Length: 453
Image (cartoon, rainbow, N blue to C red; front, side, top):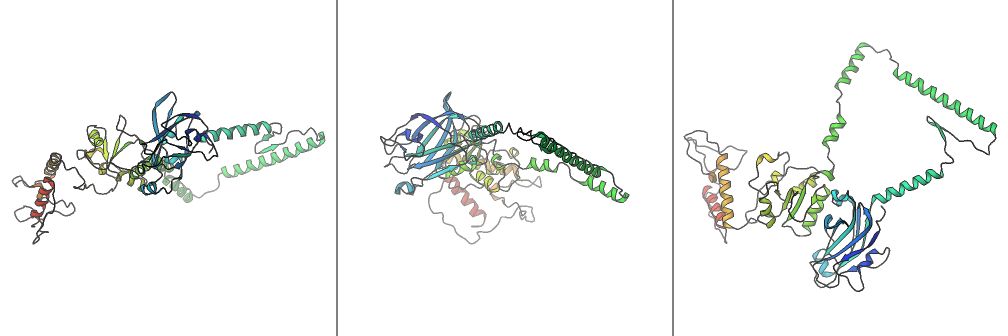
């Protein structure tokens, strides 16, 4: 694809005396752009394109930067930047400290860009470079190439138009599938007449043959009655609209999450960048902060600031990163409910038509806030009490901690109808080493004593 021409540099955060920002405008040169001082939090440069154009692919040459992010906007509203390419990793922490692999080149295709943003035309590009792993060196970019299919299509149209204009004098007159050459002013008149007669005869013969073939196909032949019944039966049994139904069920991979606008919380690079790349490849859109229009929060653990913000939003859905990973691996959109981190989510919100991993949270990764744990545990107990079915109205209430969680096998019952408790830990003594949150310690003691420990 042709390269989009960059008109000029609009602004930049800083630049080296030798490696200036305007070096990015030079093609086929060894010039590069770097920030002025080592240890800067980020290096930013804004470029103006010649005109508004769709960007379909990006080639980036690195120079000591760990992450590079590309944003776009229009000059009429240069404050509203949209993320075209999420922060992508160019150097690992070990490479940044040792200085190895500082000049990597990565080429990002249209599938790796934000699909909704790549479909629109933009005339201003913002590059954000960061280097959090090495505070003793300056960093930036060696080159940036933006590609667009629009310029390629226009050049093809121009070439086809020019070729048609050049070939206009030698155009031919067409008769069906046959074409007759135009009169040649050099050839004598007798030769032209003979050629015209021969071409006309050939055309008439071909037309007659095609007509007889059509008549033979449409002419009804003698078919016996059993054969006719068999043909009618086969015709009626053929499925109709098979191609249409198949096309309706198949969904392109880059449109699986087309209606998803996600925010990431609690992850650090390069894991954060990998999750963003997977979601964008399936058609999702990325936002830095939770705002109106966002649908999903990809969260690493509970009680982050964004987690609390989305908990107060009835339209927000908080899911684990496994949802994005499993959707990309299975190449289909899985229901988000089994991956939800919100315990108050209703079961009627989604249909569990997939088989994602079990939704079991590690208690040591949860918050150690005592009040929050007590509230969550009480809610679970109340839900468990509601799910317990009492067979006889006179049966005593059952402690939810004593109920078996195995759904495949029915609980063992004594002659009195009271469930028998398992004795997995019979004859075993446990020692709880270390400091546990009060709620977890209480639950451990309950489970040990319940199982005869």
